[in-house]
Image (cartoon, rainbow over all chains, first blue to last red; front, side, top):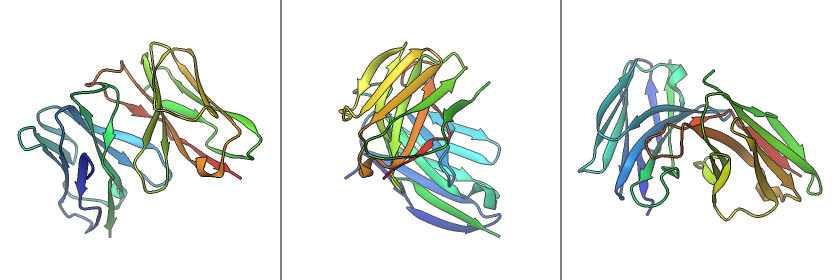
Length: 111
Length: 114
């Protein structure tokens, strides 16, 4: 079992829909990152969380440390949101600079 | 400048070639990273440099040789690669190597080994 699990693995939504991607982890963490990767490669850091909730534009990320769970929400989804969304954690034991990645959620937003 | 740049974008090489990948950032970050990513898989950490010193080597084969000539530049020297080394190679940087530092990723170099 991976230390970081994401669900769903694949998600198709229509433009305008509200989207939720979930991340569960099994280890104690110092921080959790949400990353976005478009086809063609480059990765963009969306959020880094260690508690609570963050919002940037149409994106909202929440984390519940006690439940070892984080969610990424996209409001009013748009085709340009189509990408792979990756959850990554920094385990609280081990090397601070080493991320443990989830396997990603592939999102397709259609017109 | 909030960018990590990588060159080249694409590289095709034979198993006997020697080539280098280059990564540059001008954000004053003191930690730099090399990742390898196979198709439909998450990135795998290869190396971390912290303050220009190699701090993590994830048991990477010696045919991959990292170099950090200064705080802005990170190279990955490639020699005698195998076809299974074909992948997207991503560079990243962060302010320091600490747990609460956001990593900024470059666009990657897509490497094909023939």
